[in-house]
Image 1 (cartoon, rainbow, N blue to C red):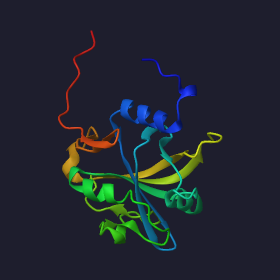
Image 2: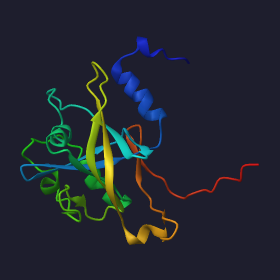
Image 3: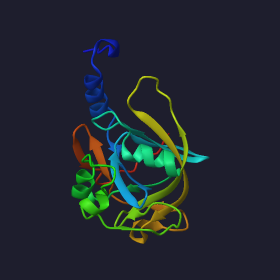
Length: 197
């Protein structure tokens, strides 16, 4: 079957892409505004470059068409913290995707513990094996799209010491949660590729 994207709906395109471009890591993004800690997961997420060290995640709009809190807060403060959730945090990650009023903190509402290891940046989720403390870099204009890709620049990174397998070589190992269509998945066992002849 060949699908011409010009002839199908945006929702069908989303379904096709989200079930084909897999697995996708999930950015568990923490932002703040007026003391309210906002926590939200985004599965359109990837590393972009190591020089400058940047990542990209795409943010949609609320059901009423207004910008999601993450987008509004990042535009306002120019700061965010991107966490990668552990398997034990799946339920909290999923709950934090629920749309709440802007003045309601997902961290408080769903009892998601957080800590602030880097002054001047939003807190990270406690127990996350990895977290990136980022500055806003730019937005990508996709014209009429209701989804806005945001590029953030990593200024520092937290890695749980239990994930470090070789500090000298900067080798880390952990089991992040990935998104596959409407389902979640664990990446599981690593496999070393065969040598290139």
